[in-house]
Image 1 (cartoon, rainbow, N blue to C red):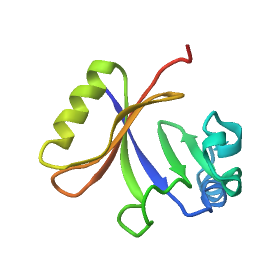
Image 2: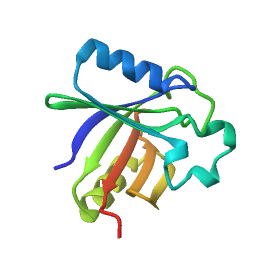
Image 3: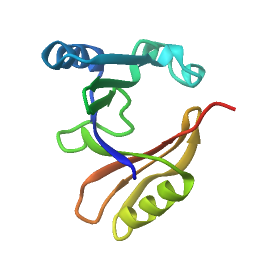
Length: 136
């Protein structure tokens, strides 16, 4: 079964926030700046130090975060529930079920790390579904 993690969105201060959470909670912090990823060439130069993805692993839970904001960041769209799926079948099934009666924001799409899709369910809650696949 998929694992569930909070996914936070920041407006340029993801690195600072995640380091703060690490100081408070301990754990292992991984930061992925835009400039060190395969999407760097698709982003404006001023975004190279922005955080594309980060994860703070503390015991049995993870907090994930980014500086990437596909829409204006306001309180309410700055936090998502992120399901890390285990298979193609699982991600497709969960995406279809959760999006029923809601709104697909980004259909399941291939990325350099695997698959990702976003939706708002029929109750107004934001979800990210992700399937990590080894690089070919």
